[in-house]
Image 1 (cartoon, rainbow, N blue to C red):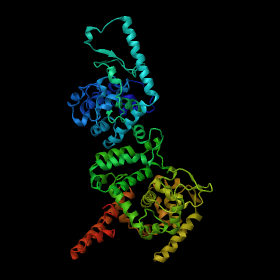
Image 2 (image 1 turned 180 degrees about the vertical axis):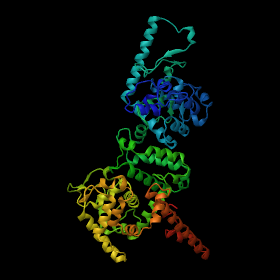
Image 3 (image 1 turned 30 degrees about the horizontal axis):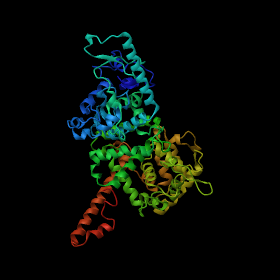
Image 4 (image 1 turned 90 degrees about the horizontal axis):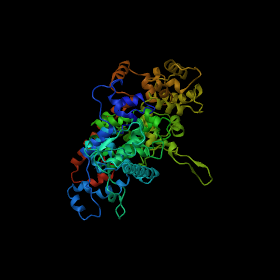
Length: 593
């Protein structure tokens, strides 16, 4: 068995530190274990063997130099024999993991989904990245010292057995029926391992010699390769650690944004809810960027651009990946993956980016939300707001040896805009609270004092006067906010004051009062009945509510544009459509319609 210490959820919960060395099979059959009921599940080795028997292909045992090899290949499907030479030459170089012919059984990548989901407990669309990772790890193994040590240990074990057989000069007893009990090298010296009956002999020596011609990297995963990957990468770890180790690069201790792209690409290729984007590569890229940026927004709270194992464990990222794998309607997965949310974010960015350079300037951002933001907060957004991947760039020096800023503060990229918009439209979560607190904390002392709040509110007073709204004096506004927030100190506010449970729904009101005139006026003129409906609706967050309403608005506007375009086409049936498309009004060139 190669169950490891996390063969089942109950085992992982009982032994999170990995100190339990009991055999997984014994653990599963122990009736005294809390929560164990019914027949024990098969061990990992048995389940893996069954899946390889069901999905795999067993290559014929032939010599590459033999003239009869072509006849043996002809017995299999051509698609299954395409990579056979590489299997027989390169894969079996490891005496430890390819001891028998059955260890060469392999599963093509297109059949790997079931094993990925049922055995490894990853989302099914992870099968191709997982497949590539197993191949890469196997190549690293063959080129490393571990491969040499394993083969030396194997040779010593075989010599010891041959010497013992020579000394005792005894043959296999008749009662064994020709079955010899052999312990493989990775079982020697372990408490868990037990002798297993095996009927297959090791591969003939002639098959251990590589072909005379150079061969590419092994293109398929054999049973022996998967065996090694499991015991090295999966068995010692729980589900969150396995997920983290698969995402990151083998030599790194963190996950970067580039590590997510292969998995989002597979999601775009496989998910039925995203099939309509298959012919729009540009929007596929933007969707992937949006999903990854939203992941970093919620998981990488320090905004370093590097997700650690601890952050993965504290987040719901793995469960959301499983949810999107099982849910056919992509818009029901509102965390990270909703297409409607991507549509809203990208269209809002596109509306502000008039020159189409994928950069938002200060003047562009002032137009956001019908000019709802003050110029003072816009300047602070550019100067002090957290950027999603600011800590992930290399330090560069100019000609004078001065450090060049890692991220330009003269514009907002699309990723920066996502951070801004998620924080602006949902001020009831910790990330947005810290985002805006950093913006309004002008002196950077982690305290929001009356002087700082008064400077921001002075701009609001002037704007309310110009718009003809009733002016609320600063003292009255501050008294009202202090009653709602109930800070620990009356002299200043700290970020922890906003994060207490009773402040979750009112923390954003102070920020709106300081720099968003439209939302503050709406708060002053709010309808109690509407507020009660808002608390009782089905939306989990303010962002979900905003994205739903804004998506419906954008959809209606698009329908109206299409109707107007049809009317123009009906009135001018002889006009060339190229002129219409060249004006950038065709829809597909502007936004992901």
